[in-house]
Length: 218
Image (cartoon, rainbow, N blue to C red):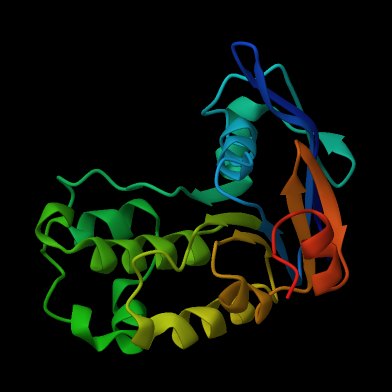
């Protein structure tokens, strides 16, 4: 059964400055939606508004046409933020148990973690922790997930594995991905949007990215 998440009419203001005035994004199980935007465009603000982590003027969230209580959104949408997601005092063992995800299946894909079962997050490099957190969000039991800058800090040798994992998991989930790396994101998405001047615009070609100021005309 296909499920659809629609986040609409997002308005984010900081004092007199309006960052997002018509934010919109949608995800559908079985596909990956990409969201691009220049630094400061408001992508992370939209996600934090959706997850209830940022008080905003307005945000509308529906799943399969029904309104969703922001206070319970975590049951439906798992979110990988730009910063650390898991408290650094937890071990990988504790983090994987918390998310009900199989650690040893993770090790099969990334053998370098085989000896880190009892390792605390603070003992790991930023890239090592980021990969573990990304895996937890993708594999957690929820129909939708949002990945904010998932390729940030990831070792280049793992980029292709992460791309494959996103494509595999989208068979059963709806995934939203944002990243500054256009080439990395363009290989995994089915639909692409760009956030520019406070509004979300559909992208059909690179010309759209140029028109909305994301790419320079070459």
